Structures are given as structure tokens and as C-alpha cells.
Length: 433
Ligand SMILES: NC(=O)C1=CN([C@@H]2O[C@H](COP(=O)(O)OP(=O)(O)OC[C@H]3O[C@@H](n4cnc5c(N)ncnc54)[C@H](O)[C@@H]3O)[C@@H](O)[C@H]2O)C=CC1
Ligand SMILES: O=C(O)[C@H]1O[C@H](OP(=O)(O)OP(=O)(O)OC[C@H]2O[C@@H](n3ccc(=O)[nH]c3=O)[C@H](O)[C@@H]2O)[C@H](O)[C@@H](O)[C@@H]1O
Image (tube, rainbow, N blue to C red; front, side, top):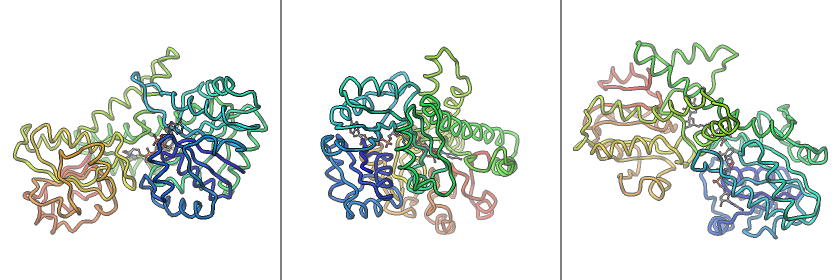
């Protein structure tokens, strides 16, 4: 089939590449000329394991193309995926201006029946708005389908090629058939395509993210109680996770959730509920708990060293909002580092992939950048672990101790053993452990 994908962010690039990989001809459109130029030169603008290799192979095989022009992509396309950003508006609701602008441009360039697919995360009612906007700009037949995306950054290719499920909301058998054909190669393993009405599909995406964010805030609250009553959240996690009704994944306490999706999607659901005259109490609490959790590590540092940190120097391991990505949107690291700086401390950071992103968009020259994990430590009053990259999991703690001024570790992701570190002469702080 011929596919167009609008937007070359995480979702657009991964979806475009995977649809090309399964034999379709795909053209990705973005209005960001610099991004398209870089993609055409073979440079992948995001760090995502496995993406670069797959993308280059499909470009070389002439199945995957990049353009800034809708006229190069839309005419003749069977399906067009809208995968542009839906950032929060001032009031927390999703800003649909990019989605609707894309819908208009698609309609203006269609040459025959086309399935327009909402892949971006959008509130209930958006497909209807997309349909309205598009019909103002074409007389041709088209259908709008909701097909939310559930991939995780850092595991995006696998999530797309082997999805737990594919959700398709449609009101036309013809459109549903096109979608079934497109997804057939990915659901062969038995993971289902779930068809439903458009509104339910739109809400399914928000409900999934809101549920996952709720689990995280819940476990962070359990961790905070653990600290107060002398329990250990890791043991509690194992104890409850073995119940099949609860399940063991996504129960890790830490510094709160970050990234481009949970924070904005939780806000958007709260807003959607308000607009429908409903006070979504749980989700408001989920957000409040998360904001508090992002400051927790700083509060532990303050509790140990006092509130005036001038003259203190800290080593930070990990900047990205989670491992295996260079994405720093809403990263807890930014909150921790800014709080340390505001209290007068100096900071040296190391992250395997996110240092460029940090330097250009989030931290600038306010911190020093180390060239490897070990030299981030030199002369630091403590090591603060923020993101659990694999390369931080088993350091040589004797060597770490030699570089630090004082052997203190603040472990924001509970990846180290308190017992082992205390036996080696460290002072250890975890999150509810
Ligand atoms: N990042 C993720 O892991 C996931 C994101 N989502 C959702 O997918 C959507 C996209 O997210 P990201 O890929 O992270 O977005 P992003 O913000 O990184 O990228 C969006 C791209 O769309 C382009 N764009 C904006 N308006 C355009 C237009 N009119 N025509 C062509 N291109 C246009 C921008 O230049 C940008 O390159 C969001 O709604 C997000 O919530 C869903 C699942 C996972
Ligand atoms: O809508 C989206 O964009 C995506 O949002 C999340 O994916 P992502 O933001 O890439 O990252 P996650 O792996 O979900 O992690 C989000 C945050 O939660 C934190 N987290 C995760 C799991 C956990 O047990 N504890 C925890 O604190 C992570 O450190 C991270 O900061 C969802 O997992 C995807 O299914 C969804 O498609």
C-alpha cells in the first residue's frame, strides 16, 4: 500500500519506518525543513535503539521517503497517518492546532478515497473535528479512523512490530479493512486488533496512560510510607506484583514519571473530565504526587547536607527521563539539578545519550559535562543516580569511592543494594528502601 505519515517525531518516524519494513511505500512529511534535510542526509534526529539501521535499510530499498511537501506524499496514498505533536494548552487540554492543520493539508492534496488516521494522542471528539476540517477542503470521499499509538520510547521498534494490541476506532467497514491489511504483518503473533467505535478508541489511549501513571504515583506513595514505617518498597513490589491481577510490571518507585506523554496526558484527562462537569479526583492526585516526587531526591540531599549547599559539589548520573532515549522532556533530572543549583551547589553530569539535548535545550552551561561516568565523580560530595541506564548498574564501587570526596550515594531509582553499599562504607539513600 501507499502510506503517508505526517510528522517525523518519535511516533511518525517509528510508524513510517515499520510500515515501510512491512513492504509498504511510505512518505513522511514534516514542516520542519531542517529535520527533513537531516533525515534525507541519513541522520536520524532521535536516539532510539534499532531505528537508525531499520530506517536506513528502508530508505536504501526505496520504500521510505522524506519530504516537506504534502503534494509529494498525499496524492494516491491509501492511508495518511497524522502523527504530529499534541502539546498541552495553557489550561492542560491538548492543543489540536497541529492536528487540524495537518487534516486540512491532507484534504487539500488528496486525489481519491483516503483513510485519514489519527495516530497522535487526542481527546475524544477529535476525529469528528478532523472530519469537519477535512470536509471543508475536499469534495472527495474519505474516512477518519482513530488508531492510538502505545509504543514506549527506548523500546519503540519492538513495541510497534510486536504490539500487545492494535486499537482501531472506525465507523466505516472500508476504512477498517484498509487498517486490518496494514496491521496484518504485526499482529500475526496472536496479539489482537481490537475494533471499536471512534470515541472509545480515543479514550482508550488516555485511559491506558492515565492507568500507568496512576500505578507509578501509587507505588511512589507506598515508597514514601515505607520510609516512614521501616518497610522496603522493593519487597512490597515483589509481594504484590506476583498477584496475577496486579502484575509485576510498571511498579517501580523512583523520582516520578517524566517524558513527553504521561505528564501531558494526565493533565488532558483531568481537563476533559472538567469539561464534562466531572471532577476526576484520582488523576489530580496522581499529578500532585508526581510533582512532589520529582523533588524528593533534592529533599533527601537537603536533609543530609542542610539547605545551604554553597561549596557543595554533586555528580549526577543520568539525565534522560528514562534509559535508552535522549529525550529530556519533563525529565526529573532537570528538577533535581535546578533545585541543587538554586541552593548554591555545583553539578557535574553524565548521560550516555542525552548530554547534547541537555546542553542545547534544558541545562545549557549551568552544569559541567563529564566525558564518562567516572570522571563525573571527581571531588563530588555525593553521587546522585537519576536515570537507571544499564551502564550505571554495576559500577566498581571501590573506584567510585576513591573519586568521591565523601562516599555518599543518593539512588533515585533503587538500583543499588543498601546492604552492599553500607558494608563498603557508603552512606546510602534510596526511595522507600
Ligand atoms: N513520543 C512517544 O513516545 C509517543 C507519542 N505519542 C503521541 O504521538 C504524537 C506525536 O508525538 P511525538 O512523535 O513525540 O511528537 P514530536 O513533537 O516529537 O514531533 C511532532 C512532529 O510533527 C511535526 N509537525 C507539526 N505540525 C505539522 C504539520 N502541520 N505538518 C507536518 N508536520 C508537522 C513537527 O515539526 C514535529 O517534527 C503526540 O500526540 C504524542 O502524544 C503516542 C505514543 C508514544
Ligand atoms: O503515550 C505515550 O507517549 C507513551 O507513554 C509511555 O511511554 P514513555 O513515555 O516512552 O515511557 P515509559 O516507559 O512509560 O516511562 C514513563 C515514565 O515513567 C517512569 N516509570 C516507569 C515505570 C515504572 O515502574 N516506574 C516509573 O517511575 C519512567 O522512569 C518514565 O519517567 C507509555 O508507556 C506508552 O505506552 C505510551 O505509548
